[in-house]
Image (cartoon, rainbow, N blue to C red; front, side, top):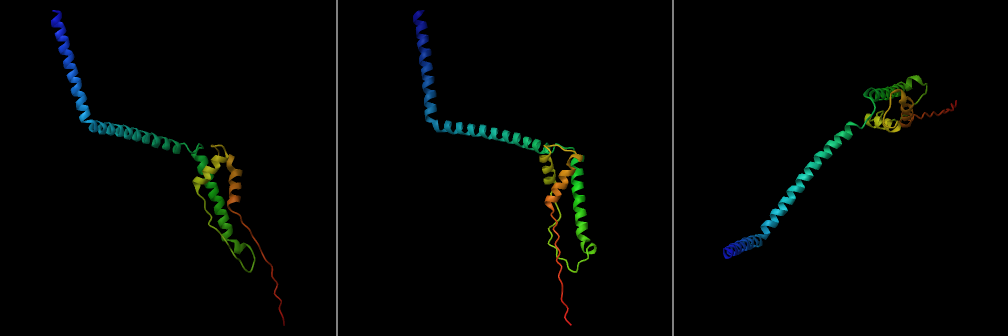
Length: 164
């Protein structure tokens, strides 16, 4: 019974060794195939990770955009409307300049009167630590307006000599 057990044990060992040898031989013959399969799996993993991180970035980007301005809409719209009103008053002053001043000759060197509302609100947000009310930005709007629009008026008096 011991010899039968030993024979069975040896037969099992030989079968295991043969199977192991066959598997090794199979892998050695197909080494390149398995390398390419491994590379393909690695690329798929990297691609999947890249795609999932992109979706994370776009959702973060929209969160940042949505929370860029902390002030209430009424405050931002009011500041924009007030700045536009100041620009309109300046334009009216320039449009009626010749009729309100009594000079013989006028020379104008004017730039466009306009602004970017997003830049205006961004500047107000930065100067007021992110959040502001319309009442808080009155002085700031005037200061920004005076820096953006500088009106310089020069007049020259000339005399003509009339000879008889």
